[in-house]
Amino acid sequence: MTASGDAEPVRLRDGSTLVIRPIGPDDRDLLRSGFERLSEHSRYMRFQTPLASLSDKQLAYLTDVDHHDHEALLAIAPGDREEIVGVARFVRVDAGVAECAIVVADDWQERGVATELLDRLVQRARSEDVTRFTALVLAENADALRLLERLGDTEQHRVGSQVELDIELPAPRQASPPLKLVLAAAARGLVVPAISMWRQVADFTHARRRADAVAEPANVIVAHAYATEDEAPALNVAADLAAARDAHVHLVDTYWPVVSDRAEIDRRLTAAADELRARGVEVSTHLIGGDTVDAVIDVAEQTDAALIVIDPRAASLLTPWRAYALPARVCARAPCDVLLAR
Ligand SMILES: CC(C)(COP(=O)(O)OP(=O)(O)OC[C@H]1O[C@@H](n2cnc3c(N)ncnc32)[C@H](O)[C@@H]1OP(=O)(O)O)[C@@H](O)C(=O)NCCC(=O)NCCS
Image 1: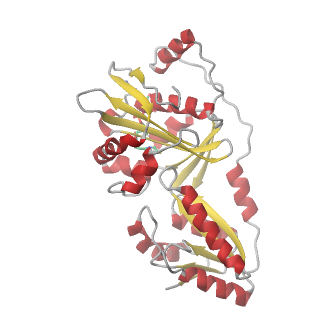
Image 2: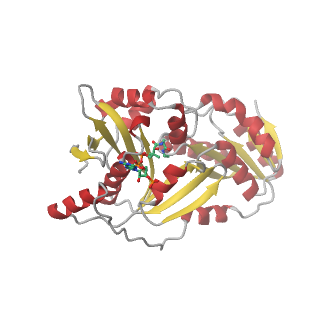
Image 3: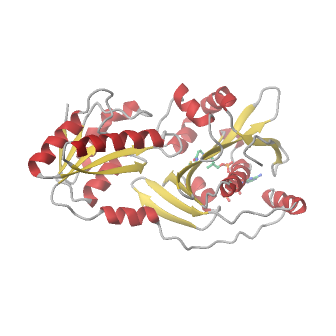
């Protein structure tokens, strides 16, 4: 399969057939209806939040992909009306590293759809110079953990209620047409392929976290500093306190892997940091995948923080309703004082 939109017919072990092809901007309605048909459980497992619907902006982000840094493959069931039965996606987050995620329609699960999609996603990733996948999966999601671990040599790290996977992808297959047939048979379970696995790259995420862990004299943590459109009270309070106490400010923001527009969040985080630096404050930024509370508490503990500052109105773009729970959840676990800035 190439990035240009080739559709590939696939036969599952139970004899049913599907087509797998890359997503395109015309697939918004298809994706919306596929999402609407997902059970609450599957939605929660995929998005790790009780997401009720996808906004137009999210649909645009999820379908209008460049097939290089962002790729998504659809599994489509044949029939009078096209129906999405699965989506596998990667988004590049660093040189050679991409986050991946997958979901399969409930009535199509345990029939090999995810295996077929991931097989092709890995091939697409390797041909775009992605050598590692990361994934953030709920710790209770044993099916997904098993499925993703099979892709290659995997390291797991528990992050709160989630597990972060770091998967070394197998080398690209130089498949000649006859070999392709053998591989297709292997995917259908007729032959068991030998997948070589190797372990060579240290976990950069944890190395980076350890580097962040150097204690500093007075650290102030700010969550979602800029999240209200025109005001940034948490940022202002943190700047004033930092100036008065010679503190180092850590700005923390989070994204949901493969559904948030991480580049946009990163831009806003950098802009907030630049604003503080212009006011003479020392700043570090932390853009972390997953739950905001876990991220804030992690950074507070690692930096031996003196104070966490939160704007209770700060809304996550993806899950605005969660923002109201943020202060209470942070207070319950904070290793230091918490200040609400309004
Ligand atoms: C996790 C998820 C993607 C798996 O999709 P799936 O299509 O059911 O996965 P597969 O069918 O390829 O494989 C699942 C199991 O079914 C088995 N299977 C596949 N075809 C089969 C068949 N014809 N008969 C019996 N079992 C079969 C596989 O061997 C595998 O079993 P194992 O893991 O115990 O060895 C799916 O459950 C899902 O969408 N969950 C919600 C979203 C989610 O959790 N996403 C992951 C986080 S990003």
